[in-house]
Amino acid sequence: MSTAERTAALRRAMAGRPTPPSRPNASAAVEQTHAEVNTSGSGQVAEKSGDMLPLRVIGYVRVSTASQDANGYGLRAQREALENYCASNGHQLLTVTSDVIGGTKAEQMYGRAVAIQALDAGTADVLLVRALDRATRDQLDAAQLYKHADENGWLLMDCEGANSGDPSQRLTADIRLAVGAEERRRISVRTKEGLARARREGKKLGRPSKIPRPVIDEIILMRRDEGMGPKAIANHLDSIGIPTPGGGYRWHYSSVRRILNREGIG
Image 1 (cartoon, one colour):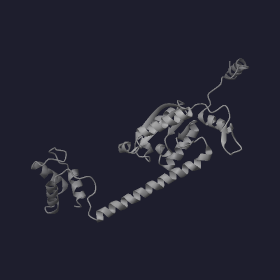
Image 2 (image 1 turned 135 degrees about the horizontal axis):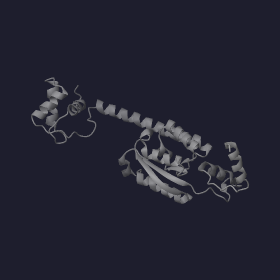
Image 3 (image 1 turned 180 degrees about the vertical axis):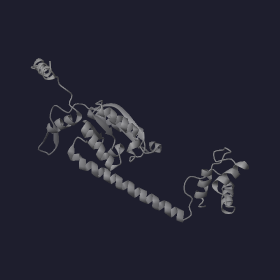
Image 4 (image 1 turned 120 degrees about the vertical axis):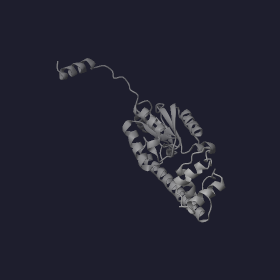
């Protein structure tokens, strides 16, 4: 029997059988919900019966540095926001992944990558973040993330109402990310200007050195008056038993070079 004949026989055998219901994907559920709402006379939106199915959610939380836990924007606070959002909206929070990395370093967001793999595999319907800038702070990455979500049938949502399944929100999301990018640029400019001003005023920048001042002065003298290079200075410090900043007895020329750079000695 040929392939065409087997196909025809299979179709005949299956004719008249009811098609089993399937769970709609997240995007279809959102579209159905939008189609089922009407506008009351007061201009408020009211939902009809047959609300959107509870969504399966993977949460994602991110901070740029571990120190953010101390100022109220830490991973725990974000996780609580996701839990509260899902509880209030009847969604199922399956798990929460996390990263401690800057929002513009998408290639190093391994926690986000794990969540996306699970979503692509159909394990969940939604990637939920407290705010969009937790998922990304890069506009190009955001566009790629939105496209990837759409192509693979899942949603990117945040606790502030953002929803990638609603085309009307795309412009708003782009504006929010653009405002965030401009804010970061201005902070960077102010920081660089402040550092330059501090240097002009002779202020010492960075953390205090662990190296005793007499040792630093000796390094400067060896470089400036005797013309010794960083390697020669490191070897000399080893030979006379001067402890390293870490308490050892093996100086590295890179350590000497950093001291000279910090002191403005070329």
